[in-house]
Image (cartoon, rainbow, N blue to C red; front, side):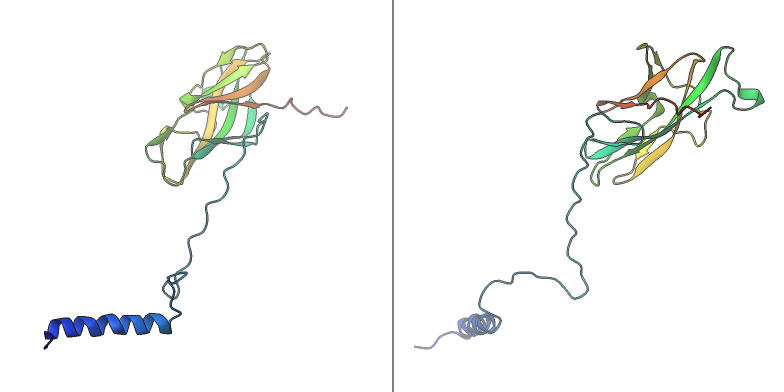
Length: 181
């Protein structure tokens, strides 16, 4: 019986692959990579939310994070930008970062409030402290940062910086350091 040449060639190809498979260890490859190609780096562990965040802490939010890096209380921003009588400026330096695959995430000064010790709140005002945080879309895996400025009564005692964006987060403001006498 004569076997057609197409079947004969297919049989030889299967036999050759079997021989090559046995010569290479007989089992499936444990890892396939071209020379010079690095293995993917495992994702870093997600940051753990502090129990009682204070200014300086980074807090996880969604796949990214939000941080209040520092605060500054000041009475004047130059001759043309003084606060109204009996009031002064208070600013929070903030940073919002998105996860590697997050898209369409916005970050804005309007997401922040300043809560006083007496539970009153101040909304953000004009961006007096520079560089100011400008509303914008956070690039995937990237960050936006800047200062958010508030106008408060001179006697006010700021207690918390509050983020009210994708979730509500609060950073406790430590009391001002006292100067030794």
